[in-house]
Image 1: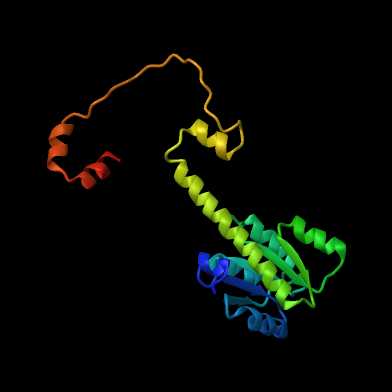
Image 2: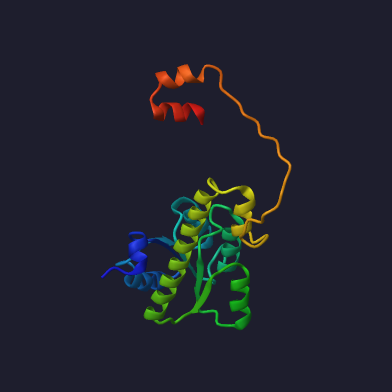
Length: 199
């Protein structure tokens, strides 16, 4: 039976960032049946791959050569192209200050090694479901913005006021306009072509 994640999108992409081959092998064994896996061995590779592959989620180690996980996360969140990708730190650093720092840098979760595979999968599923739900809501909001007045749209999606249309009187001017030769053009064109021309 397919999970909620698999129904939303087939084989979500996960970028695994770790400089230890054994850790990568363990994560691949856990994840490969349900996810497409990309591997980066350090922070610089991770930044490059994240920009190219656009993974749905990143599992990020902290202690790595060249660029550690904290700086990698900071740069991912500073890049508009990768800002919204959920990052889960997966590291042996268990100090509370490190956990807080990771979350302050924009990570959605912090898992310490050694980890429980079942727990890790549940956390991955939860953050992917949240990501896909946010994307669906953003797409819906974008579609609705085409059909709602700016006032109503702001009321609903930006929380500026209660989502209601008040009743009050206003002075207004109504302007009617015609397009020169429109009737002739409309008679000569197919409806789809006419709509495209009008737009």
